[in-house]
Image (cartoon, rainbow, N blue to C red; front, side, top):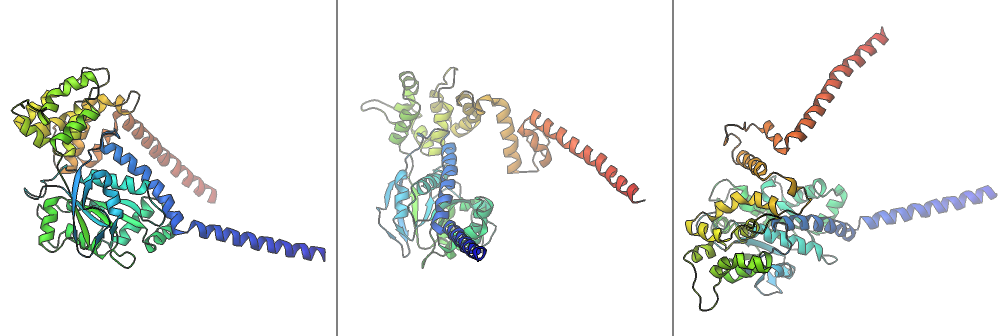
Length: 435
């Protein structure tokens, strides 16, 4: 009788443990708890990406102005203009929360607004929306338009949650069913190779997939970036996003550029003296004149991309003689500033990297050469920009470093040798044993 009672008690304890474990499992599958974990993961990656875009300096943000126009049945609880740091609040105040970000140039072709801050804007939104997410709000998830496989948007997002963010398929589906994912799709125009997208182009089809994306009783919230020229073509062809706020980034003004440089690279007495000619060319003090290249310099540094490059290239390096920023004026006047900054940028990153970091141990010349090879291959795999370099795909991996590649080669040779020697031995041994 006692053993029967003990067994009954054990059965009830086991049942209680089972239901407690099931309740805990259900709690873990609650959409909010899954979203909270995903938001933390996204925030870590977003900060890394954001820091990289700012050249490693979290104080290097150019706080751009923007204006917005509403298209379709969409409402905003926030003003239709502001600064980049306030764009997350604007997106949260939209119903539905659908945004298209473009540059400020509407003429001059598809590439006219390159470097105006669209990718930086996407990174800023990702960081702000993931860091400051409120319960019940969707988690921003970054997506590259160039990776779109042509499937409906919800399928693409669900696949990325599983493959990139390592969510179990059931949890990914749970978030999708609860409409708790905000896709942030960068570079819609980069899905096309043609300068002028047509209504049947990949960019138009991707915008169509965004339009078909469903939310809770309305169109699904989404953020996309697209160059102004390409989006204008899509708009005229009737292939633009619907029910959306179109946010247009404004140029960097000369006074903003001067303030940015003063705060980032001209913040000591010696550096202020070095930068004085450039600062005065951008925004001359009252009553003083400007050098003849001032107008070209202001135009060139009106994008956050080139402004950030200029600050990085002419930042004071570790233990070396500081470069003279007056070169910016000379190259702006000659129309060669973009090429000048791009050519010097890799070496400048190495020279100004924190002491002891991996970047500080790189060889600037070798780093630039490797980047040149990789960029040329990505642009045209059949090209050969250097007679000393074979551009076949398999020979690109020495870019990783000769010593590292040699170690990998030796390891592969050892593994293959072991396979060649051991496998026949095992097979012959098994055959001999069976005779």
